[in-house]
Length: 520
Image 1 (cartoon, rainbow, N blue to C red):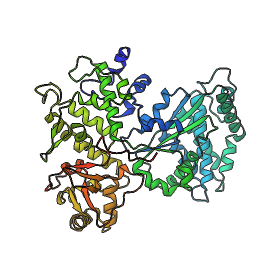
Image 2: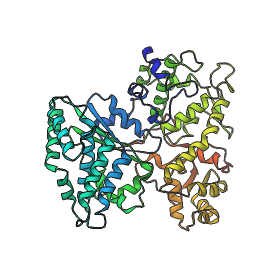
Image 3: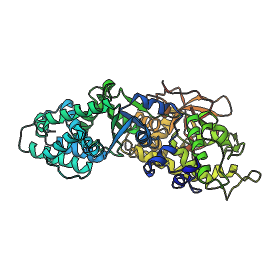
Image 4: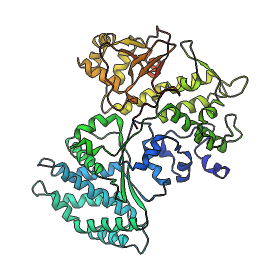
């Protein structure tokens, strides 16, 4: 593996030994392949060829999207600019949006736009004598695009053609739009391309990364999403050789489902990125071993082999840089790994941010005996980034809950870190409804639960309070008036909640011994 140290040094450094927190920063395909940890159920699920990858911000959607680059079955990869594709489709259907528009019609627009984007991205990758390449070049020239250009240029050319043909014509002319793009040739290219891919046992894939803001309040966007979901739901059938992979932010999932004309079909090929503690530990250990290869003379470098992660020895690898225990702010002794994980929402980005922050404290707070990380380095490293993590959660949910930060600031200081449903309602009446500008307590509670700020207590008979949070369930977490509730550890400290009961909260799924909470 030492031959890879030069590549790894670009992404793993003493300042960030666990690497970048944003997969978009990893531009080298070989580095992407090295940094991606594959020993988890999520990666195995990619073999089922999901067309939709759903995950919260920081769950690794972009990494899983880009994993096709080191999957040998995908010989041709076309990465479309999602915002450009959306803009193209929305521009195309805007002229007919006030008429009678069906999901099937918008689906056809998406099919046209996305596959023409594929044609533009794949044509120079196909063999020179390929029949599909010749057809694509002829087709693009026929619709008025003779220059090489970029895929984005081609998408906007399609938009111009559609918009020109729609102008001053009756509504419901999607079929005519498609004929304007010479739909017969369009279909023949797809059939030829599928045939050539099948003969060589190759696949092509079109990647559409997520958007931070889909502007769901705009009516035409709803129409566009409805057609897109139908398009995605019918993609990646067993016999096809051209796959689609689209990323959807889980924060908006409950808003997308009502837009679907048939949720059972549209979401059937979905991969939801829910992580477990052992999988996150494996990811961290994998990065730590790679850091040892990149910076083998650093105090935190370890000499373990990457195969040790595959053999289930990730915990032992990670423990090599941590003290045996850490005493939390409540005075309770905790396992360092569990202490770190309970300050995340089981998201890879949260863990990497925390670990990089902790490691940055090595010089200031070294362990006197081992010269590795001390208890204080762990406490300070987490404290330094807690607010950053909280603000990122607020930012991800801003399109849904724009007042969440203000509400938390007003209400959480009035709460204990464990409380009853009645306590929560009283705080809402005193502080929350004024800040929310609403007297809807159910909406207030739903916001806190959906964002993972408030969870339902499962057990508090021991040294810890174990609680369930919505980000570990495949559906909405429902609580009754009899349930005891609690705050997530991240929000307890940032918003100065009261901690009369000296028991730390452990979100379910945080401890290494917790059962895998996901459905198979």
